[in-house]
Length: 516
Image 1 (cartoon, helix red, strand yellow):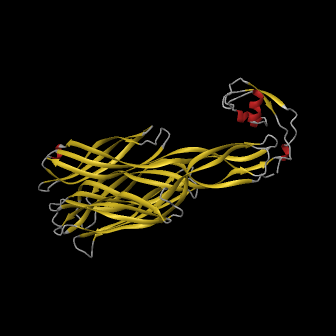
Image 2: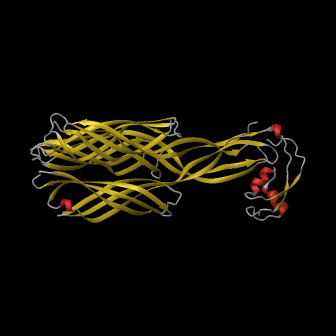
Image 3: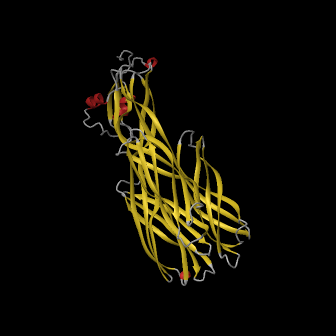
C-alpha cells in the first residue's frame, strides 16, 4: 500500500567525474609554391578551436582543429624568414564509463607542445601534443519526499542541508570582429603568427538574461614586403546575451568561452589593415545556494514501512575568486647579447595545486619564447627559457577536501632588455572556482507492507550496545522509540551510550489500523 507523501522538487548540479587525457596529432604540411624552401623551423605556435562536442553512453567526442603557425628560416638569399599557416583537424573520442547520453561536459584543451621536423625543402612534419581536461556533470531534477501525510505513528530524522541549486543552463553564439590597422608605412607581405586569449571576463545578471562580456586580446606578428618583422596588438570586445529565466544578481554565474572558428586575413577592402573574425560559443550555468529540510530516515513502530532511498553527491559552498600573481625577475641570457628581439611570448603552465585550509599552493613554470634576429637580419633564431611558478593563493573558504578549477590569464607583460639582461614584469590573473561535495540521503517514495504486519510476541528486549550503534538504529531495528528507550533506561543524552551498555527496549505491536 502506497503512503501519501508531500514531495519537493530540486535541481542539483552533480559532478560525475573529472579526467585528463593527452593525445597526439601528426600531419605533414606542404610549403606553398609561392614561398621559398624551408631550411629550418624557427618557431611554432597554435590555437585550438572546438566546433562540436557530444556526450553519449561511455564516451565524449570532440571535433575541432589546431590552427598552426610555423615561422621558418628560408633557403634563400633574400627571404631570410617566412611563415606558413595550416589547420589540422581532429576527432577525438575520450572513453568515459560514467558518461551517459544527455550529460554535460566542460572541456579545456591545451597545446602542450608543437614539434616540427623538416622532411624536405617543401614538406614538414608537425607533431602536436594536446591535453584535454574534462569535467562531466549533470543537472538533475529530483522529487524528494518532504513529509508523510496519512501515518499516525511515525519516527523521522530530518536534516537541514545547504546545496547549490542550478537555476538554469544555456548558451549563445557570438563573434569578435575587428579590422586591425597596421603602420601606414608597412606593406603587408604575410601574417607570421597570431596569438590570442580571452581576458577581462565579466557577467551581469538581470531581466532573465546574463550579459557576458570579455575581450579577445589578439597579437599578430607580420612580415612586410621589405622583410621587416612587425607586431600589432588589439583588444576586441566580446559581448553575448544568454537567456536565463529567474536569474538574480545574487546568483553565481559560471561562464565559459569556447572558440569555434578563427578567420584572420589581410583586409582586401582597406590597405594597411588585417581583418579578424573569431566565432565563439558562450555558455552559462546560473547557480544559487539554497537550504532545504530533507527527510533522511523514517520508520513506524506500529507498522512495517518500506521506502526507496538513494545517496546523491552534490555541490555546496561554491565560490569564485580572482587574484593577481606578480612576477618581477631578472634573467641573464647570453644569446641575446648584440641581437635584436622581434617578439616575446609567454606560456604559463601549472604542474600541481596543493590545497590546505585557507590556501592553495601552485607549482609550475612559465615558458618564455624569444624570437631574435641579428642587427643585419641575416639570421633568425628562437630561444626558450623557463622561470618557475611558486605561488600561494589565500582563499579563506578552501579546505583539504575542496575541489578547485583554475584558469590563468596573462593580465600584463612587460620586458626591459639591456644587452644580455632581461627584466621580466608579468602579472598572471588566477581565476579559481572552488566547491565542496556533500552526500545527501533522499527518500523517493514510501509504502506499507501489510503482509508483514503481524503481532510481535515479545513486548521487551534486552540489548547490549555494540560498536557503531546509536539509539536511532536500535529503536528502528526493534520497533521502539528513542524516547521510550531513554525513559525506561534513565538515559539523559541520546548521543551518549557506551559499548556494552545493557538496554531494556520496549516493543510495539505491528498493526494495520494506524493509517488515517
